[in-house]
Picture 1: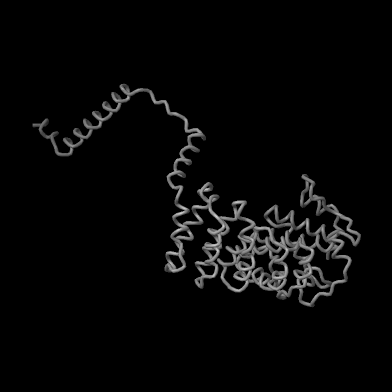
Picture 2: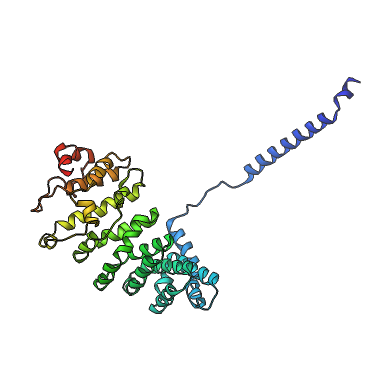
Amino acid sequence: MNYLDLVTTKNVVSAATGAGAIFLVAKTILAGIKSPPYNPEPLTLAKLAIAHQSKSVVDSTEVRELLLSLDPRLDDYSKNMILHGITRCVYLLDTEASACTYEDIKLVASFLEDPDISIKIQALRALKAFSGIWKFRIRIQEFIPKVLEIITSIWDYDVHVAGLRLLNGLPLPDHTHVLLRKLMPGLMEILQLGNTLAQVQVLKFLSMLAQKEDLLFDIMNCQVHPEFLHLFQTSRPGNLLFELLVFVEQLCEGRLTPHYQSVHWQYNESSLHEVLFGNDSRLADCLLSLIIHPEEEVQTQACRVILKLQINEEGKIVGIYAADSDFSPFSECNADSSIFESVR
């Protein structure tokens, strides 16, 4: 009677489960014994390249098909998707993208005229993708005036970022300088009121323009808001502060060129020059607060600007050598406290 008491539902289930587990373990061990030894073949870079090439061959007509399907008469959604697909394919399928023609570039650029802002953005991004192919860079230059017009006449952050990224990857022909002088206030507005991505891109663009002797005065004489120096606040993103300091450094270097020093320039009262370099400028205080910024590249760049401001009228550098690989922001900036007093 005692043995029968052990035959319960719970005990039967436990015994069946245990037997099943033992069977599975034994089956696994036997399978392992009978199977051949595992010898994985290394996946070499050559095989990865072949696999990528095979995929490219399969997709080798994708860019052409997308370009053939691109038509101004399509609805906005279709135009958006096709332009986005072209951008993606140009980045991924180098060989096929390089086989495109100038007519293809003109077709894509024609959508810069589309009234829909999102389509303009996709067209700008597609042109940016094509600009990575050397033979198209000169061709795309002819659309620079239109791109400049778009980014300075439409207040949209995505438009600003897409357009400026395109411009920052292209050489600027001299014939665009007249238009740039006219549109400089619009670029300065993006710097002061845009979002961080747009501000970083416009600073890169302005730094490039500041290296053009015939544009330097137009940049310096551009009207800015009274609170322009708020851009130097330490709470700003590090990448923004770094590009802002690079821009100021380019302006400092431009002021010391023979061309600039040979003319007595007259600046407006609220100009960028007066805010940065005028007698009542508070730039020195902003720079001194940035040399203790948490990000090292901001510290270093702030010191570079401080020391560039010490260049005397003859162009002699008091403090910094850009090629010095051992440059340390603290060792250089703290070497002589009189430097900081003179900046003030």
